[in-house]
Length: 213
Image 1 (spheres, rainbow, N blue to C red):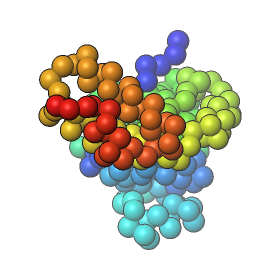
Image 2 (cartoon, rainbow, N blue to C red):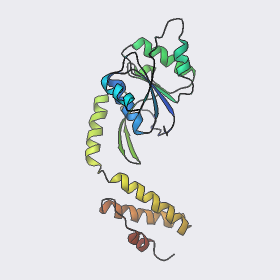
Image 3 (cartoon, rainbow, N blue to C red):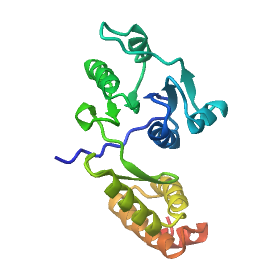
């Protein structure tokens, strides 16, 4: 069954990633796109992850070993965490961490087993405030990447600036017009104009469309 696409804010929220290899790096980069407060726990960081740490973009923690009799350091690391990504190449380690996350109702994604994951890491396209997420429910990640590439080619870069401009005009319109139906019609016209002019909507056009108020 397909997963429900819920978009949440990661800004200022602690995201914990176990692993320092290529898979971890890709997922870290996605989290950073959304201003996640990313912490990485790895026995050894690859060059790309280490570079992010050197640049101060992520926080590193000492590597830990999950023991059969429990692991206090992992449990401590989970304190205050919003979500967890298990991207080590040790499936048993990932599984044990996932069990701890489930017990604490912390969303977890495991690179080595979808059955351990409570959320799917989608392929994403970001155009400023516009986000498109693509998921095949973890069954065909290569297909997700292909769909993302096709959509990226179809979405102009200026869509992001258009969204920001429309947000500003929408707020101004609320102050000028108290009729919800009229606002919806005007915003539709402004959107069409912006799409026809690569995101550019001058104030003169805004004033002309809304008319005297």
